[in-house]
Length: 141
Ligand SMILES: [Zn+2]
Image 1 (cartoon, rainbow, N blue to C red):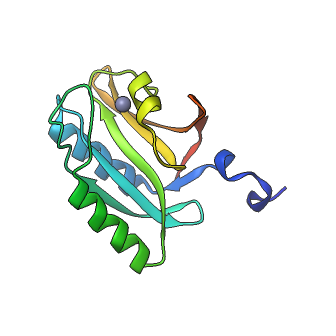
Image 2 (cartoon, helix red, strand yellow):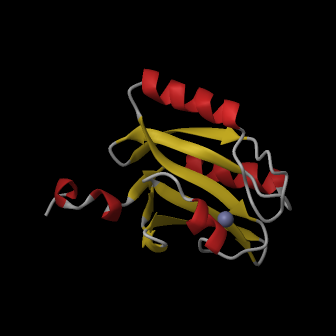
């Protein structure tokens, strides 16, 4: 069975080490506040990361700056890519999505949580649907 036969929500997301590293650097520089951004690409391969201001300036939630988000969506459209993911940090954990994340999930994309565990940033992917979630594999090359 090829990747094309797997339902969209079960597909792993493909990222480079550099992309993962740049997200970790970004969220680390904003900790203890949560920070966030968008991932765009083609098929399941991430090609571009947007760092978006968290206008909530909060340690426990994020609200993407709507202008920056709109600009990113326009860039994604005009470059014929798709929105593949949304990332945000949990500077003090947990490693999985929170009830707020589930309640506020508005897009059919992979939600990446970067959580700081024992001083190290770890990234995990989740698909949120119907009030629940399951893990999406992050394939890092
Ligand atoms: Zn969260």
